[in-house]
Length: 233
Image (cartoon, rainbow, N blue to C red; front, side):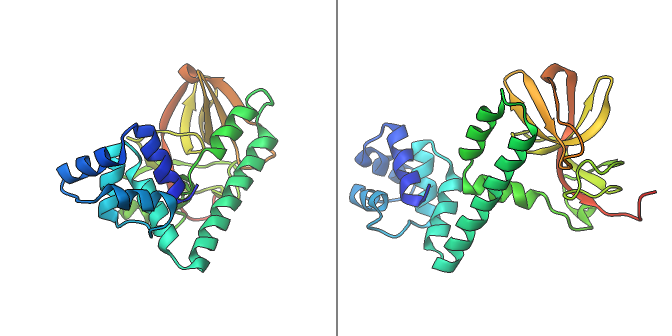
């Protein structure tokens, strides 16, 4: 979904007329007129500035960062737009293939639908959060987690790496997390949440996925990177 489609959906879902949106934007200090918003929707006007996009999204109850992101992509040179679209499409399809190979058939359609509904910004953010560089302990809000003692998450996370965790955060489908499960112990996996169940996926296909009840799982934090140490023995 591009900028104009996202903006049109945002306006439609708000149930506000363009005049009402313009008036509400002016109330928060951003003056625009209805005809300008109309041109933005049809693509007859280049995407608005961050200030205007923030105001419109706020008034319409939409995702401010997503609208700003799509505006930035739309205003970029064609080579940048092509790169963003192809890279996010690649990660979307490879994620679907990974889940298709590991998830039970009963839950697969739900998960694939969730992946298809992810925005390009969601994909970019998930990728950027998996920062593999050393020295992550110098960043704020990072907690040192356990050392990964097997190759279940390779090639994404190597055996012997010390996990960097963000403890106070929302967990979403597709996130890499550290969990503790009764009678199983601590493990690092990609999570899929389906109603009252949780599916935990390894990266290494030699390991099996685990499906269990939410109430059996204690989430210790979200993986936001790792620190490489000496070779694991």
